[in-house]
Length: 144
Image (spheres, rainbow, N blue to C red):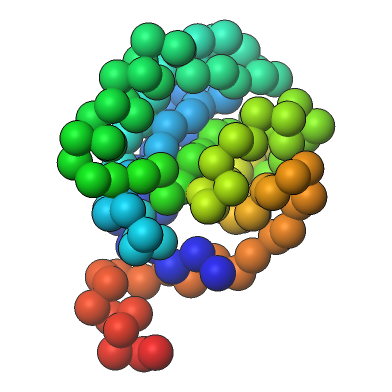
């Protein structure tokens, strides 16, 4: 299950809408071992494509080093699909190299409605997970 603050969901969706018709991508970092996404890091889609995304290798190296320096890890890795449902493609699965990450997809195919879904992708196996959106993580602890 992915528990995530509404403000982070809103930032991901806004990025996906802003980059449409190209796919948007980025990460949300969090403290190592916490499974708590806290720091939103939008990234550039090096492909600038409506059907494919790829992190720029230099930007990715910089972001991953910054996470290491801050004792963080990529808790959420997100991107958008512009014409299809929010479900990982074969290419998405082949690039899923962070077994502890939540892979979030947002579909911007419908201008009126956002489809926001999360998956675990480990060894090529896709498992959809529940997404719980909270106003703050304090709210999540109170309801647990």
